[in-house]
Length: 483
Image 1: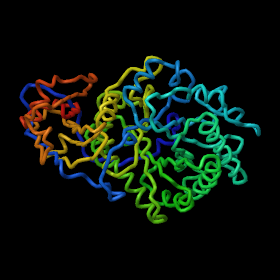
Image 2: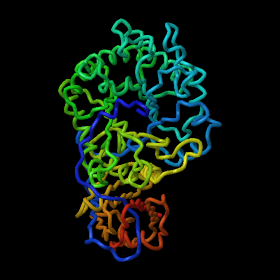
Image 3: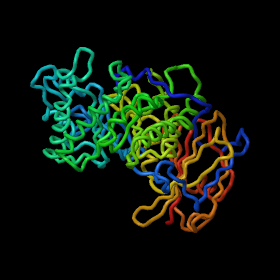
């Protein structure tokens, strides 16, 4: 998606909004907000009608740096490797808009001689870039962005006579990575944002045909993989979605789509956060409504690009505003029933949760992904706020190695201190207010980054149901475990 400026034309509707958060001990400046967590009520996934569960796939990231040897691989950039390992995204999507560019002239390009009949994958470069990358073992989604230039006409569209050859070229990358290099990549995504291209915008059924041909060729190499697409730039255009699904559905294992909330640098944060909290998740609903018209097959849904602006640079994607946005968006996508999500992106100067190469400094949003991936996998519980324009909760009951845990995220999207009080409904004995043997950890994230709060002070007060103050422009991550 990065440097693919056709995506700037997409528009995600906006709603209401607010600010970000952290904690202070001084008196609150707003009315008290009640937060209730019901241990006995698990939410329902609106797509599957099964209990809603959060998994490592929900708090993933796009890899914009991963195509480059010397960054993510063994012996690569230490700052980058440490930063991504701290965030531990459970899903990594390899994506670069210029993937099919000449590998000798584009540092992220992976194709040799893309303009000639003897085009091929640059196996040596691909191997070097991926050798030992992401040692925390996330699920990988490999995006096959577009087409080698030799196979296209003057407009950039794939020539109909070359559909099968393109499919075979996709299959060749499956062979290189899953058979030759034994990477065992599970998710393969064919094309990216072709609905933003003039030659496919009103003919997405043709993209579905290309997808289906490629998928059949890829399964010949590895029948265990899951294949999906087409990475919609526009997630709110039913006619285009339905056109694609109408021809792709026999081979479609998952559908993928993107949202960006604004192209303006002057709209207020309230609108941006309303978009994240309320509208981002709606993209999954649009996809589901279109898919079910053509197939009852249970496919997966990946909201695999999201961020604030389609018109960078925008400073808000690098500071605390992005941390609040990502926390609200991740919650919205999860509640909508998506299988997984990957924010755009892990590291760069404009969008990244880490800053630019070579130092790759951590930005506030990086801690959001660290804490979500640290304790927010499990049963998504009913949690409510008496004022969701100020304080937004997410509660998850997890279990690891036989030990349960309660994780609660509180997002203060208001511009003032919020006085809050937690009510636990039907709690587990080890999470009762004042229970002995509790292990409580509290982290806060704001414009300065992250810090922990001593468990002898505020965290235990929260569990006991006492009023506590959440500062503006901050997020709290509370975990409770039996000791």
